[in-house]
Length: 187
Image (cartoon, rainbow, N blue to C red; front, side):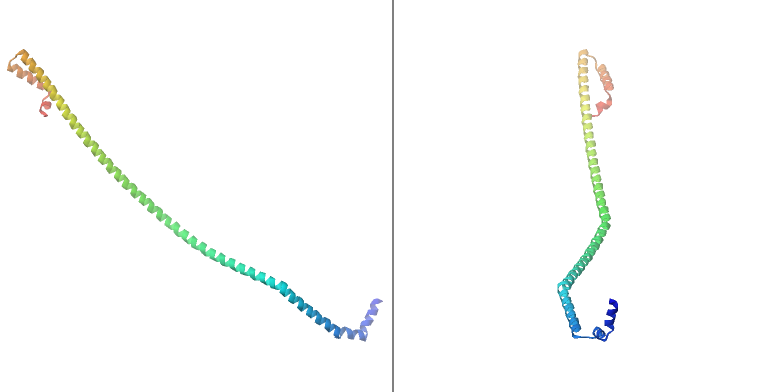
C-alpha cells in the first residue's frame, strides 16, 4: 500500500513538476556543490598534488642523474677495458723484451766467465811451465852436484891409487856412461 501511495504522489501534477523542475534550492545546492568540489580540488592541489608532483619531479631528476652517472661509469669502464686490453697486448712484448735482455746479459756473463776461465787456465799453464823449468834446473843442478861429488870421489880414488892416466881416462868414461851423456851436456 505504501508503494501505491508513492506512485500516486509522483503521478500527480505537483510531484512531476517538482521532480523535473529547476527551482532555486536545486540551483543553490548545485552551485554550492560545485564550489565545494572546486574548493576541495584547490585544497587537494595545494596540499596533495603539488607535493606529489614535487616528489615525482625529484624522483625523475634522481633517475636522470643516476642514468647519467651510469652512462659515464660505462664510458669509464670501456676506457679502462681498452687500456687493459692494450696493456695485455703489450705484456707479451714486454715479457719478450725482458727475456731477450736476460738472455743477452746471460750470454755476456757466460762469455765473460769463459774468457776469465781461459785467462786463468793460461796463467795456471804458464805457472806450471815455470815450475817445470825451475824443477828441471833444480834437477840439473842436483845432477851437477852429484857429478861433482862423484868426480871428487873419483879424483880421490885416482890420487889414492896413483894410477896412470890411461886408467884414469877409462874410469872417467865409465862414470860418464853411468850418469849419461845427456845430463852432462844439458848445461
